[in-house]
Structure formats: structure tokens, C-alpha cells
Amino acid sequence: VKVFKKDPSSDEATQKDLAVAAAGEVASAVRFCYAHGLLTNPNLQGSLTISAVVTKDGWLSLAGASASVPDNGVVSCVTTFANRSKVNAPSKTPTKVSIPFTLTPGGK
Image 1: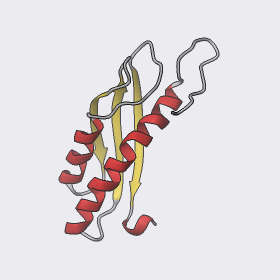
Image 2: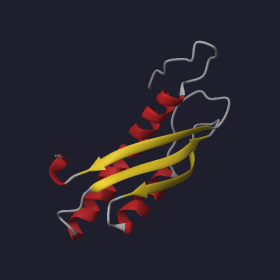
Image 3: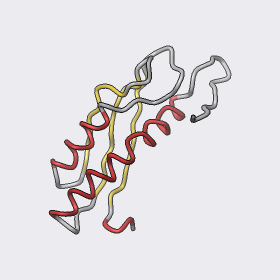
Image 4: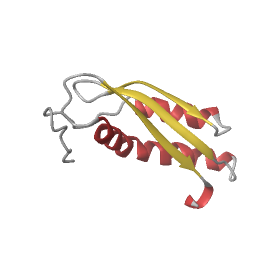
């Protein structure tokens, strides 16, 4: 269970903590989707940023992506998985997060 730093003025996780938790939840999907894209294009690389709202119950919703990765299948795959993700974080209000990833072959 991830322990979140609390905002000193409330009992909620901070926006940064929610973004870190969300990144952890979708990182495996990003790796999976990117690996699938590499099968078609071994030189595929670029950046991918997921924009989402962490709802009061922890689900990521309205997940969209902006990307310089020239593979719409990878972007669509990541967005689909992100929309099915949930973080274990206390939040009284929906919180917007932005989650950046850099994709390079061989993890360089």
C-alpha cells in the first residue's frame, strides 16, 4: 500500500502524490503497449503524456493522451488501460493529473 504525504491543511494526498500513484498504475500498461508497438517498428520512440482526473474513489477518468510517438495504436492502447486504472489515495475532490513518459527502444 502506497503511503501518501498529506497536504498539511487537509487529510488528502497532494496532487503530486496522486500523479506519482497514477504513473505507477499505468506504467505497466505503457510498457506493454510500447512493447507491442516496437514489434512493428523497432525504432519507435517519442514522448507520451496522459491527462486524467483522479476521482474521489481513486479511478482515473477522462484519460487522454498527447504524444509525439508516431503510432496511434500505442496511444490508444495506453489510454484504454489508463481509463481502467485506480489508485489507492484519499481525495475529497476530483484531481487533475498529468503523467509524462519518454519512450525509447532498449530503455535508453
